[in-house]
Length: 439
Image (cartoon, rainbow, N blue to C red; front, side, top):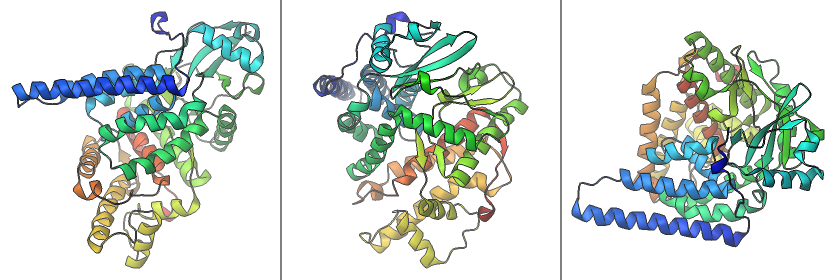
């Protein structure tokens, strides 16, 4: 349950208030750098661990109070394990399900705005404190008779502040992500589009139903029902799923057989979405999955869904084939279409970037190259992190005159690395099904 002491009575909503918060955080981060370099003059051997720790705490604290897009970006960066020093990963991971919740009077105000009623007049019981609080909304438990509901309420002002927040978070992202500006702008345009969709709860309900129905035949999955009469554009009411978040469930020491069963359900869920319905739940972090006591996986939160264009799908997955038997001119065309290379590149740059992206996609494709894959293989993940480190420190990427890779790849890569990361946490071995044409 949420701790009363940590609840927020208000969120800075106006652009001026939010910009002021970013400005004071930026000043703190700047101060941390000054302190670090002053200490380094005395002790040249000093590492950046303390600096990262202080910055992570200051940035997370202010983003938590602002909620919304800025906190969501922090959450996304924590999933990309090879992007950030560990201090940031550890702190930002908390954005997935433990941001400070809003106080009850703010919740009542939101209900009055959208229903003209208080939660107490709509439900028999409604928890005063949030049972879960994340970046864009928080969840309360409610009942009508014997029926138990999860009620997700969006934080005030989140939808209106997406674009301005992303502009404000840009300097932090540039410094933390080690990206050049063109890459970051490319990344942020796609992130902005997805975040605006995430604030549209009516779209989320529609997509939740579509994907739940399309995946209803997959064994060991459970999808909640959604209730229109108890929902609005900023409030979603759905079935309460009784169980543990993936992280808590793993702490109970489940058997290998159960871990494999949950892992298989996850793989089958993503396989069907990507290859058959071409739209995918693109937010695979532990907070979005609940394990019921019978080893069935409950799927929640369809706010972030990536629709996969057919031409992107064909090019991207054709590169994942184990034996890449594509003629050189066809291969070049795929690299052009996926925006890995362009006419602006010299011959040397084209060769270099083709090599790097082939390596990256063949690494991502490893589980597809066998019938069964053991995701407890930490060496596989070390290879991924090592490649990520190499790329982020590579001069060719830093001085590149353009962003690399189609914007559609951002969420597809993120989805697969997120899925692999979950399967690694599960230490699961799964049958890695793939479409006929990819075998």
